[in-house]
Length: 146
Ligand code: FES
Ligand code: FES
Image (cartoon, rainbow, N blue to C red; front, side, top):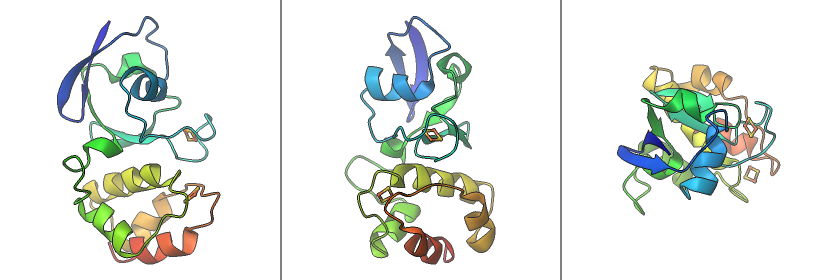
């Protein structure tokens, strides 16, 4: 059993191997399925979460290294059901998603960039995510105004 801080709460997770990727602990142990699996090799960005405010690919971030740190997933970005974080609101306003699979990772990366004080084209240049549905134009239009 390990103790993690996820979305502002202290949680216990039944994990025996601290090398387990954080993604699988979030999804399979804690039931936080908003964070997605895409490539598993740090290419697509679908698994992006915040760890101590920094964007990280949870598919390759071992859970042992997350102990004692503040983990934030898409579920923790705004109070349950509200989706009222400014980035979520911008996404909704511009109807960015199609299937939605890649979008939590995109939103979390965007939030991390904004926490670092980046906006517009600088923010966009940091978001090297893949979207199978091809929502890139709407992402560009949305991020350009953040
Ligand atoms: S699943 Fe982690 S970067 Fe693609
Ligand atoms: S919205 Fe479908 S993969 Fe991006």
